[in-house]
Image (cartoon, rainbow, N blue to C red):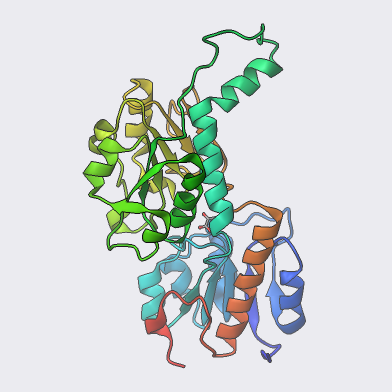
Length: 327
Ligand code: DGY
């Protein structure tokens, strides 16, 4: 592939592996030093002479950034979720947007299960007890949790990752319900039954969220939905924090209206809703769904490849706004 070396790209953060050095071999790369602040201001300032942008889900690529990017041709997001980009405005300006689907599916599904098991079986409570010297020996009622095998798993958003989470449930002999905009062609493979959102919420023992963040999924789970869940149910979120009304969730957990939650993502990341950290019935991880050595390297390679193809005027394999491509 030949990309003209005079092209300038902005990379907002160094990535694992050697993907960025491969980018440097072909393009002028503007990469902040590790101690440099990477804020919105820097993005607005540095985008002005760039044809390409390789960004993270934490970089807000809004109308202000795009208005200051007269040369920009490609935005390569190193994530599957690209809700950080004003896609409508980018498309209007003819800028291609790409993401990194597929490569993080299994890793993210693993983390959903780690949270599910940790919340159900109270692993963090047990870990804290043992470390603090509070373990005084086996006891019949010590840290009782909820069984997982044989229960009902409800998947909201039966896409790539939702299906991978559902597939793992076979080993636990679980019944699987799912809710999706359209019937999923993958559901039969995992024996999942499509139901309404309300049916899923009131029947599932574990509810796992796998929807993209779009207007219709913002606060998809709020007070009404939490009230519908079983008091013994556990809510898992590895998608985007804004899918849950976090204030309503804190209230539901505080009042034991549901049994627990496992959260990898937060509504105002990295800030947490008041009261969340004080709750015992929630397991929290810092947005690490795709954080394995192998997956982060695959994501970086894919993001670089998408950028190079787009800058070469080709159609990137993982283009999310084909309407902006005029090959
Ligand atoms: C994504 O890719 O959207 C995840 O949230 C981060 O890996």
